[in-house]
Image 1: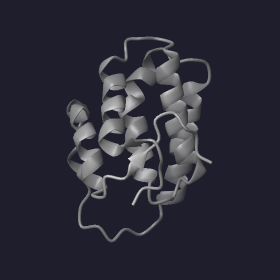
Image 2: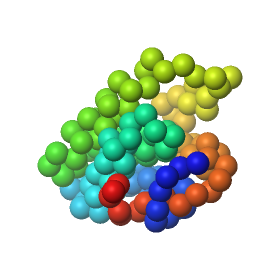
Image 3: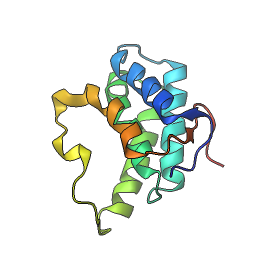
Length: 132
């Protein structure tokens, strides 16, 4: 279960997908806020049970971050992802497989479909709130 508030995982994945598809918009304050909120949730609990949600979100929004985000936005995303990597890298995993293993660069458009499947509970997720 994902500890969240705000929008559903389906809605959140649609927001992230929209940013991925429209990443040519540089310095979009709404996009920046969404990336920063996602990074804040991941940084707040980089090894938590919802870390996969925020990691996928930042991955989906990565094309925007390579275009021209606001000042410091890309650095916050990278810092959060590095914290998750440090926390999770050596952790044992009991899963037989992971959806990302079949993911390739050309398959980025399918990440939005994977997110709700990873959390069968369809819990709520934040749109603009920051982790508390």
